[in-house]
Image (tube, rainbow, N blue to C red; front, side):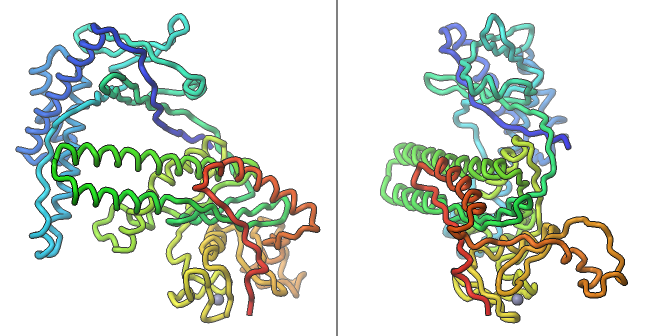
Amino acid sequence: MIKTIEKTIKLKLLPLTSNERNELLSLLNDYTSMIREALDIIINNDVRSRRKAHELCYKVLREKYPHLHNKFAQEAYKRALAMYRSYRKLLNKWKRLPEKKRKETSQPSPPRVKENRVIELHIDAYKLERRHGFLVLTVSKGNGVYLKFLVMEYGYARRELEGARLGNSKILVEEDKVYLLLTIRRNVEVYEHRNKLIIDINEDSIDCLLVNHDRNEATLFSIRHDIRRIRTNYRRIRKGIQEKVKNPRLRDKLLAKYGYRERKRVEDRLKKITTLLAEIAKEYNADLVRENLKDLRLSGRKRSKQLNYRLSVFPYRRFVEYIDYKFYERSLSVLKVDAKKTSITCPICGYVDKRNRLDKETFKCRRCGFTFNAQYVACLNLFSRSNDGIVAIRSGRLYLVTRKAGPVVPVDVAPDEPPNHMRWLREKPVQVPVISKNSKYRARATTILLQLILFYSNSPCLSYEYYNLRKSQFS
Ligand SMILES: [Zn+2]
């Protein structure tokens, strides 16, 4: 299967001459004024759709700025519309607050363009090409005027650009540096694999079940991370700044500074964790099985308090975006599985009850008595929901009984066989191993995993642990 993957890379432009800089700043100024004007029109007419925005803004902007490429007008009203939309979202949220709370919080104010440092580059308005060994960015300003800039190219960028298609991008103008935020797309061939890496995404850890059909074994492990801690720490810092710093300019500056740091840190963790998981999966030729984010109802009107909390401490959407990208990049597939109630469902008998979860650590089924480390219950459930098989206990040990397409055996020839609908029980089960020292085979498999994890967990933020089944009891 061919998949298109997309990402943005940040490239630095070589220092501009004063002439180039003036040209670029004049474009930035014009572009910013266009956004302002589009925003005025959009607010005054309460424009909600792209079509309406085009109808009202495009002509006005084109007439007023005939010297600019028409795509800048289009990008300007698109940006203005996005600003207005997010304002409306905030406003509606505010309106829905209970009376008392609404009086305490101030009504969100309509958006304004204070300062703008970004120019959106439509794919038709720029070109990136190699000339005499240099990477040259050509921006079509309009009216036959072209701005040319040299782009710094690192080995990393060269690799990324190879065979990639370009998409709508951006120029970011900072005080002394200018960046190109380049969107690149590429087609990758994705294959399906028998082995699966099943992940359960949590605020403090990513809990995993690696099912290795090739070796007939499965391993539970967990990658702990400190994203929740980072987020709560910075929330405290922000609160402190808001309370203590009275000077609004200084306050904004400090908030921006710490906001930037927080984003950087979280970003760093997300990248590390997702790369680690993708590398493990690559090593074992395993596809990803993850929860379907639609279940979280991210965009729904009614978000539960609990969901809001989960989203405030862990960036699910971005995590999923990164991890999918990294799996596709390595030609591995991604399977999405319904994750409703996976943490309170018994993996053995399917009984659903909140009270199955005795406490944070222990899961005990109220119907069949299955007792297990609560952390990994969701993974086991995701396994059965991925349609690969079921989780079962055979002579006191936990097995994953796989559902592989085998030859159809007529029922009358095999009277002792399990019922027809459980035909896959005839297949050889995959075992969740007790990691034992005297098994060379298993030891090797885990060592590879260990090395990989150690390699990526140089920073103390990532830790891992294996789950030893001996810890659990079955009753
Ligand atoms: Zn049960």
